[in-house]
Length: 497
Image 1 (cartoon, rainbow, N blue to C red):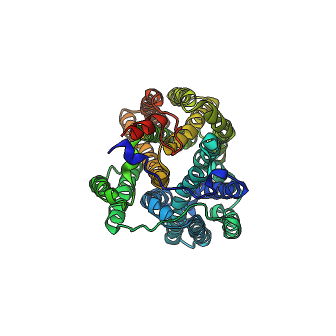
Image 2: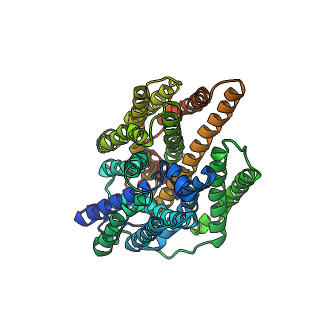
Image 3: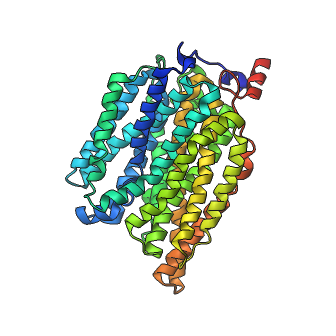
């Protein structure tokens, strides 16, 4: 694969560089809508005990309200590269928000667990389309000089929405039934759908594309199998890892290899479902790798902090949600400033200190014990959140900015897929280490609280060690500065050919 291949681009719409009022309206509408749909990925975590009581189901069954959502996201996101190229911005948005609104309605009215899961699957199908659509649209209509600022707003969606989901859930559940978690979101979703139907313009030019059914099937089994298997590892707290989990991981890995091979063949004639020429950019490769580590830290922390706060420190669900709120708010407050700094200074002055701060926060979690103060937990979470805020905008902007325009939709799909798989991997890794170490300590005579605290300490220790990998990698992320979106040095090499 040559750099010349990377710099072959399609032409943007004639009004794309202007970034006028129409474009800004579209981006704002997509930002608000994406925030609402992404929020639902983590909003049900705190609600699991309520579901178990109300629907009379065990924890292993209740966990599917989150697992089914992640599983559907992992299956649908790889297909979005094709969808965004094949259909207009307006059609894609209306489809996504209609699916999300229908799914939310089903969940709000669900009489039992089966209907709730069906609603979550429909919800996730719409959610999976929105984030790649937002990122592709922003990269298409936003001039390179101001992409950091706009991508900073996307960072709010990606990082803050999942982070404050447990807080909002805790607040709602303290006074209302779990169905209100969906009922309160529904009017916002329907309003966004109506506004989009009236005001959202078409900002991209669709092109004729053939969908390869074999790729769709391989993608579904590959990414769905991996996320399901990783979720199974994380859920095997007391029963051990089942044969189904190992079969799922094995099938997912084999189909992933087959999927990659098929895409490499199909992209030669521009028919790939997920064009892997995105990885021809070294900046994209490194950015996605660092992003995977960051998402593992974020989702791993989101699963461990509530366990530590409630099972070790004895805090209530609402208190736990409020404990996570400052970090989420800090990420949102910092994101616009980080975006402006990226436009002015590039990625490295933000990524390198960001990676250091993330690692410092991760190591801060390792100081927690059975009798630690909640304030130490809060400080470590805020530190981790500050570091992630410094990293997300430069990573997203550098990754997608290093690609030619015709690969934006595929790059967005890759980024979304990596988020889901890395999030599932982080959750599985942290919970598996927690489970194994807790069982060992309990067998050695430790009490339940001490065993849980020791297991969580070990999980945080593994996460802290992984966080160190991002620090040297951050030095190799470069800014995209060529007119076609490819890094200046890669663009120059391509011209030389």
